[in-house]
Each structure stands twice: as structure tokens, then as C-alpha cells.
Image (cartoon, rainbow, N blue to C red; front, side, top):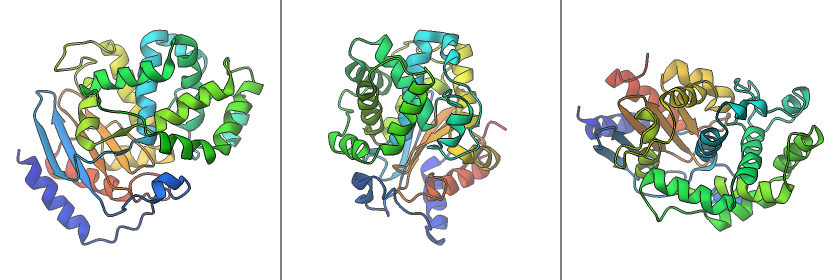
Length: 304
């Protein structure tokens, strides 16, 4: 299949439509990003890659990193992780305090902010050097030792993170946070600041398309069963309160971030990462969502 030609045709079609989204201005470091950039990269489990546009330019992956921190915790705690977080779609905004109060400090799933903060608390308990070990894990998955945190973005996250602090204090009040708050939040803010390109994201997530095994190294990251469950969690919870619409229109497990990135997985076949900084009202890339909808429609390459 001529993926790069398909990418170009879809992008040209999208250019005819107004890009109605807005960049994530509430995080100052993200507000300065050129909103007109666009990149896409598809990586097959056989190792072939296909790119278009700004696919090699790094951007802040933000909440996409929540999948990687969850995998790190899941492979250590296994099913015990579900003692401290649920696995249901939230149905409310990703930074909702109301739902966390109703659920008595148990996050609905690991991919909303409260759930990802809870996962960071687990990692602080489990790892000797959480930031360094998490970064090393991401580099192992991607096969790229130059991937790094952006300290300016991490600081920007901290300075505007009052709502996230409110969540961790609320969870701690219910006894669901075990470590020092600043230690946990430092890891969380740095995870959100990870920078990757579409090419690097596609490679990093390829183990989820390959039954839990990194294709080029042969290293098993998750068992086949836990790989299936991680993909299922991305399918149902990967797009905040727009997960149902993404499933309906795109038909792939995936995860988005407010940096404008989306990564999606077709188990047994490929990963695809797209980046377009303008966000819709739900915090997902406006043009990225439209692009992936057209891609799976034109190619018939969804899981349904």
C-alpha cells in the first residue's frame, strides 16, 4: 500500500477545511508552538516506516506518556495495580475533581490525570530512581537514547499545576497516595514533558502491536494477555471523554496528549502517530482526529 501517497492526499483534503482547534495555551511552553505544523508516521511490525510532513520534529507528548508509565507499573505489579485504580472510561474531563471525590480517591482509569498521578506514586514506591529509570525504559522501547525530558515544559507544568495538586491531595486524604507529594508530582510533570517525534512515538509503541515484544530487540515488555488489556484500555480510555467517538470514527486503540499528538495501534500490523497542535474542545488534536478517521476509512485498516 502506498501509505505516503495516502497521507499526502488526506492532508491536502484536510487543508481545504478550517483547522478550528486551539493550542494548549494554559501551559505557557505549549502556547508558543507553531499551530500549523503537521506530521504523521506509520511503522509496521516488520519494521517498515512511512512518513509525511513534520514527522521527524519532536514535540511534547504530554498525556501519551501515561501509557508508558502505566506499562512500567503494570509489568511490576501485574493485576495488583487494579487495587488502587479502576479501568473504566471516565465520562468527565481529564482533570475532573468531582468524579474523584465521588469515587473516594480511586481514579477511574490510569490515563486521566488523577490515574496517572496515582501510577507515579506506585513508581516512586517501586523504583530507586523513578525519573532516570522511567526515561531509560522509554529509551529502550524507542531504541533511541537521545529522547529526553524538557525541563522548561516540566517547570511550566508545575507552575500551572494547581488542579493536579488538588487531585493528589484529595487522593492522599482518602489514603490512596503513599509517598511525598512533591516527589510524586516531580515525576508526573517530567513524564508530561517527554519530547518525541511521530517517528519515535511509532517505534516506542510498536511492542503493543507486536504482542508485547519489541520487534527489533526481541525483548518482551508485557505478556500477551496484558498487552491485550493495555490496548483495550487505550481503546476505552485513551481520549478523555471522547474515547467513544474515537472508537466510532477511527476504530483503533490509541492515546492522545494536549501537545497535539496522537498514537494509535493496530495489533499485529502497525502503529501510527500523528501530530497537529491545535486541539478540539475535549483536548484532542482537531486535525489529528480527522486525519486518522480518514486514514482508517480509506485503507480499511481499523480493528473493526
